Each structure stands twice: as C-alpha cells, then as structure tokens.
Image 1: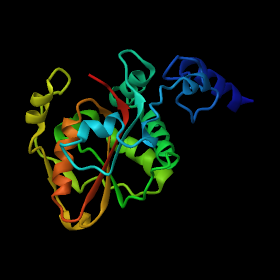
Image 2 (image 1 turned 90 degrees about the vertical axis):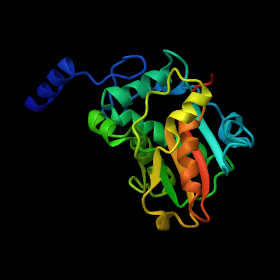
Image 3 (image 1 turned 180 degrees about the vertical axis):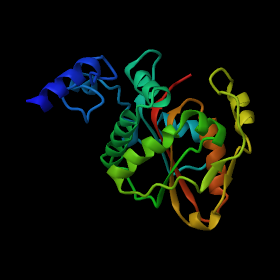
Image 4 (image 1 turned 135 degrees about the horizontal axis):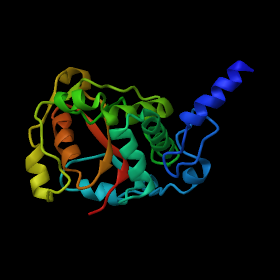
Length: 231
C-alpha cells in the first residue's frame, strides 16, 4: 500500500505525458499516446524508387537507397518530438523514432542488409553542450529493429559549423564542406553503410559526410532520416 501511494504521489507531481498532446500515459515505457501514434505523418517513401529523398541526392552523390519516414512541419507533431529529443533530454522518444524508421525499412519491399549504421557525427563542442548526439539515439532504435550494428566513432566531425537553418542550398554545402573525417577507413572497406540523421532538408550535410564515406574503396551508401522538411 505504501509503495502504491508513493507511485500515485510521484505521478501527481511528475506525470508521464505524451510528447505530442500532453495526455498522461499509463505505460511509463511509452513516449507517445496511441492517438498521436495513429496520426504520425508517415511519408511512405521507403517503398518507392526515385522517391523525393532519392531525388534530393540524384546527381550529387551515388546512393543505393534514401528515405525519410515522416513529414516535418512547423509546430507539427514530429517537430515536437524531435525538439524533445534534441533539447529536453528525451532520448526515449528518439529511440521510438528510430524503431519506427527501422520497421518502415524492413517492410518496404526494398530492404537489403547493410553492414553498419553510422549516425551523422556531431562536433565535440556541440556534443559536450548537449550531452549526446540525437542521431546516435535514433540509430540505436534503428539498430534494435534491423539488427544492423551501429558504429559511432568511425566517422568524426572535425569542423564546427554554423546552423544550417536559414542558409540557402549553396551556402549549406559550403558551410559543411570538409567537415568530416573517416578515422578508420579499413573498417569500412567494401561495406554497405546506412547513414542516419534526424531531419533532411536540402541534404547538404549528409551529402558532405557521405562523400567522405564513399572515398573508402568499395563502399556503398544508403541515407535515411526520421523526417523530411521540404523547402
């Protein structure tokens, strides 16, 4: 009885709420309620060759496959979830988004095994400020579903860049050029790599990172993200 009273008191002052609508959740392992889960804006891109994400990279970088699982809109549910992940230490929601991405890939009809998942690396100074890389959190959820191992430190970000938010496509590319280094190229030799990030807009950062990965002999590249923010 004492234990139940303590749990009830804890829930009163520290309720476990859905990150989408704020409704209280009965399952502490969840981050989003059933209603919000049903209304997540899936793109369905994974099943289609030459989808809008693959078109972003066409002619810029050779990719085997590219996909974003959700549409990103200002003040929308997916933006709220990613904001919680990036700025409020809500890694549970990031892991959930990675699982959603992984399930879509496995059921797309286009899935082919990869050797490694590589999360888009974060500069050490930014990592120190945030405490973690949101792409790693997403990647761990993706890893759990697909059983493709995650590699965190093979590719590093060696140049701190300005925010990409208000930059045009050319400016975004110039901002991130030569920002990445493959530290152990022998580990990626002739491997299929799935590069993952939270949001794709112009794809400039992922393109810059992917180019360095593809310089390793025999590598092939897929690119995925949780969300797609069209310009």
